[in-house]
Image (tube, rainbow, N blue to C red; front, side, top):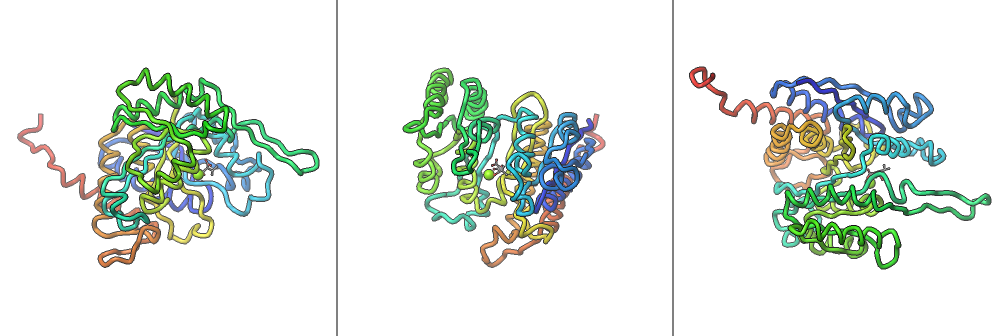
Length: 372
Ligand code: IPM
Ligand code: MG
């Protein structure tokens, strides 16, 4: 088996963390015996500088032709002055739309080794926080009609959803809930927004259809509070594009740092996009300081969701756990406790790669006599 993975390092720390995810995928391919070819393409600020466009047509073509897309991060102060449709972020939104990646899965799972890095009291997180935010990704206010009045004194963006957009997102969220704790919370602002009331009506039908899943509804402001007050009440959270953007940053902090959260953007039959949820952190770019674990865990999601190689995905997660258990930390998840060793971006990537090699080589190989 040979896979093609389009990589989009992007801006800021994007290239730093993508290099480490690629390192880990190469090691995994070698050990597991599959072929992998990386095609690096431009998007965001890097693409603006090179081509004038945040999303060159050649990037879309390369991504469509690939088996999966691995993305770093885009954006930075250099391009902040550009009009909205020419900003680096417009490239990312354009790519999500072009790839039909309408569902963004953001698992917020706390590694037991990192409970000390969680800012909440231990009795609140317990040992086992594990929630999945399923964020709608190609609709809503991110893509609705927007404008600025001629005199620049008014501006608007529109939250608009169709039933079909909500249904396809809920389909993925309910299917995920079925394989988990069978609890799904639809987060909206149905006390104010018409679009949220459409979400609710649509979800109520799904709740009947997926009767084995316990459905609940929560206003987004309450959800922001509940995530801090009692995050363990959640299993799957299904929500709109903007609410999901905001709540996933909040949930990531519970896991210790936004540098830990991976994501998978999937939907249509085409290749998915796998990216850490963090931004480009321009102040850390190129300094070997960024935490590559969110990108490495995104590579694990790429293997499981994108290439259906569950065993290899699990092996990456296990390697990350064992590196954390051995006390290795990046600066964002270090607490200063004895036994911790703080590593830079590259050293952390190397450590995970080495752990994979050790874990997978330790596995008993079939001996000559039992081999058929
Ligand atoms: C994210 C990011 C993006 C978003 C930005 C960079 C456009 O914050 O992936 O969460 O808002 O979707
Ligand atoms: Mg975000």
